[in-house]
Amino acid sequence: EIVLTQSPGTLSLSPGERATLSCRASQSVYSSYLAWYQQTPGQAPRLLIYGASSRATGIPDRFSGSGSGTDFTLTISSLEPEDFAVYYCQQYGSSLTFGPGTKVAFK
Amino acid sequence: EVQLVQSGAEVKKPGESLKIYCKGSGYSFTSHWMGWVRQMPGKGLEWMGIIYPGDSDTRYSPSFQGQVTISADKSISTAYLQWGSLKASDTAMYYCARLGESFWFFDLWGRGTPVTVSS
Image (cartoon, rainbow over all chains, first blue to last red; front, side, top):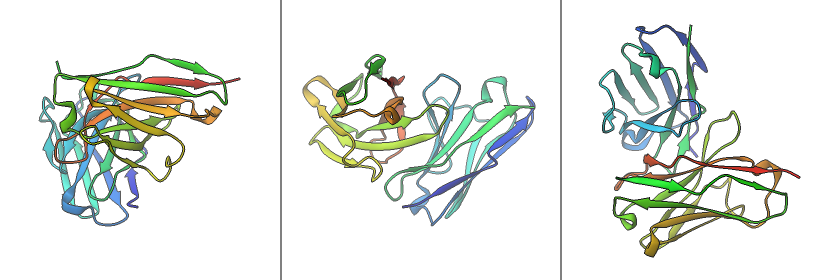
């Protein structure tokens, strides 16, 4: 089973700042089959990115994904108030696995 | 509108059985795998299993194999998650989520069914 590790656990930032979130896999993720989700309090998760770098329908272009192999990154170029949430990565190259999440919190 | 509608909140006692549902609408229900995801209070996301409603092919996470049963009735576009004997540790939010047509990321989520198991 592929284990995903996300860092940092919590990222404390202010609106307008850039957020960089990391997702590392215990082995190479086949064909960069990696997705990112956002979950705000009391809400269901929402798909942001799939295939490591493709934005899902309706996702603003301040969200971008990159990476391959075992190292992947989600970048939010300029934080909006609604972006303060928990972000999960998920690999689907070999069965399914979620990472433990990174919380983006107000500084 | 493309959506997944889940059944309402449940409060059960340990040892009781439970079956919750997820009804898809606005898309071809038999063309997408459907998954169930558990979120325990204050914790992260755990995939439990997935089912292909077209032929009921079902795959379980090793962590949940034998603990729950996933099924689907394609005639009414509904997927189910059931327990035979609930435990307090089953207390969680349960989300159904549609998988992409060709790839196994979750592109559409239900709002979740909260399940509380307490004596």
